[in-house]
Length: 456
Image 1 (tube, rainbow, N blue to C red):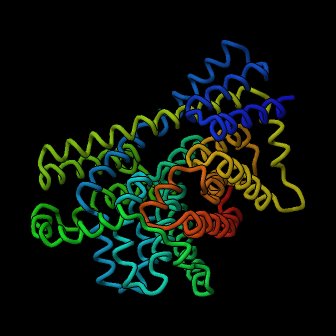
Image 2: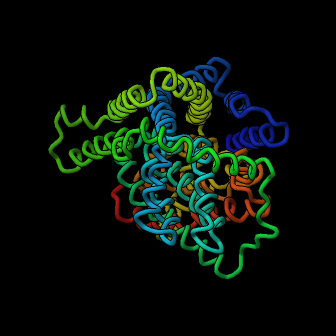
Image 3: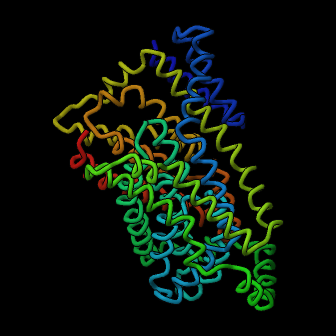
């Protein structure tokens, strides 16, 4: 009966979010309450599990999410991404630009929230599209999709990645190292596969492109203002290498801590330096200092306020996702799922990776939120993680790949993408939905290989 109640609870969450348009936070709490009461956890036990689950996930990732969002908001204000795209265009040329963008977004910019990355990068993609060639707009749109969303689910400090790692108790250094193995390769291969499809006539500008008059007017106005503001921007914005330091330094610190542990020379000092909370705080202090010096106090405070307003929503939904996982842990669903994920047919790694991927993909396709799907899938799988013959980091990457699958019309990101890139709904289904499906599937064999190589 427990698995029936779990299905009802998850189905209720999906129904509330999809059909009744209830906020995910409320829907997740309702589902948690139903599951706890129906599965015999009891009134007091259910409420305590919800509270404890929220507190546990906040202890794991709360500060990391807060620091990461604030770093992203400050980098947004400093123009780091704009400068990087301009540099890549100069160094690599238009033909290589889509692949460089997808790799750079995946590797360097997961700290910037996905909506902010899209708002920031879409005008750059539209302006550079004519230089890329006949299919410049769809190819650059796909490179944004792959770069932004693959980084979100695979690379620390992407918020989807942080949530998965926190719920599954995966060391962030470990998640960073293996995410950097899977993420950039997935993003670049996805962009390449989509280009091959474009070369075979996938894109039809007459039906797939539909820029609004407001978008075209904004682009014309931006072009008029660009020359007038270029000198001032150069005077106030720090050099690109300096602007990227708040990202690069924390990544190097976390990676150093992970290498020290793996190589056996870890000390209290290396653990302190490689601690993800401390590393991201260092990045935040660096970003804040750069912004204060370059932009002034008022503009810096505006950037921080935007980051703080975003942080609250992200923290709440992440914490409530942890509550659902805690309630599941109080039931006997772990035994049932342990049987579902048991090794069969001599291929425990393949079976486990595919099942974890399928659970997350199904949740994302129904809910329309990558983060909610990742959190819910991790909460479902976490109670039986210790019984699996696969390394937790591999399971986490599998969940990330599944949560990425086929982002479509029930996501607000879909409609932002359509309007900001100037494509039709049909075009967004190709450059966003199809691309996230391709990326999700491309990542699977890479993760399966890691599953055989990484000890459980």
